[in-house]
Amino acid sequence: MRRSILSAVAIGALSVVAFAVPADARGHFRTEKLSGTSTTTSFAITASPTCDAAGNCVQGYTVTSQQSGDMQGTLTNDGTMYTTAGSSTFRVAIIGLFVGSVRGCGSGSFALTFPLTDADQSAPFTGHDAIVPGSGTGALAGITGVGTYTFDPVSGTSQGSMIVLCRAG
Image 1 (tube, rainbow, N blue to C red):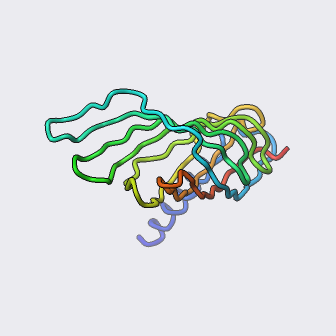
Image 2 (cartoon, rainbow, N blue to C red):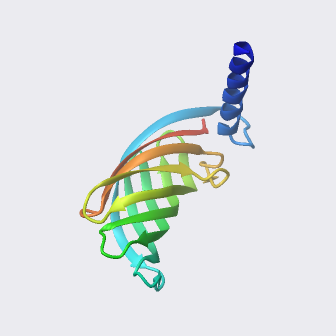
C-alpha cells in the first residue's frame, strides 16, 4: 500500500514538472530568478461600480506601472476589486500585460495573472502572480513563471520576485 502511494506521488510530481515546460518546447531552456521594483504611473477607474443595497461594490480599474530590476518595461493591469461598505479592506483579481525585457530571457510581452488577493487601502499587502501559459511573444515566447510581490498602496510601489523558465538564446 505504502509503495503504491509513493508511486502515485512520484507520478504526480513528474506530471507537474511536465506541465511547467511549454507545450511548444523546442531547444534549450533556462531558469532565471528575478527580482525588481514596480512604480505606479497611472490609475484609472474603468466603469461605474456595481453595488448591492448594503453598499458592497464591484469596481473595474486599470493600473500602469514601470518595472525596473530584472524586468524592464511597462506592466498594464486590468483588475476588478470588491469593496465592503464601511471598510478599508478590499479584494482584488487582476490580469495584466507586461511589455519589455526579462534578464536572461530577452524582449517581448506576456500576460500575468494575479489571483484573488485580500488587501487594505492603507497598508502593504502580499500576493502571488503567474505568467499566463502560452502568452509570451518575441524572445519571451514559451516563458512560464510564478512569483510573489508586496505592494504598498500608499506609495504605489511594489517589490517582487519571480522564478521563470524561458528559452536559452
